Length: 207
Image (cartoon, rainbow, N blue to C red; front, top):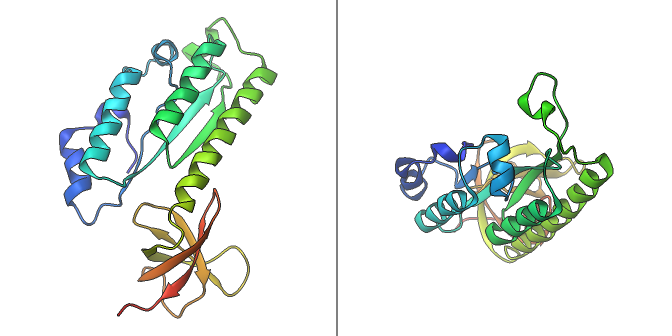
């Protein structure tokens, strides 16, 4: 599920707790941790409102995986607003994110804004943000080492012949030695290693 934060309803939140067919993962783009930048972007929610939605989701479904989108270097973003974004990432501890430096698009309102952030500054901010997220993602993935998780098989892995890939109920990628099971099958995998990008494991027969 991916959604605009303004569209998170009580009904959707409750579905994560009770609907077995729904993956326990939501992609909830925040774009910035600064109220000033959110207003410039026209995002129609505040930092505190976003954090409240995160709290409600986690209260309803502990262990839910939350990913996001963030843009750095938006016109008019001073250093303190970027620091507010880093603080939000530390507070929420997203499972992963897609992050970008701002690039103007002709015809958009933002392309007329003053206070353009230099490209080198935007690139540096992106590197800092991505390093922070890699650290958080690796820690979260590492906490799963030793556990046995149900995985739905996607198909062959990308790491060469003899390996398969699948996804957990929280949409984490898992690779493991190939099995005779077909894509779409649900199997149990013991997690043996973790990286910021994926989990590695061994298929365990169900008793």
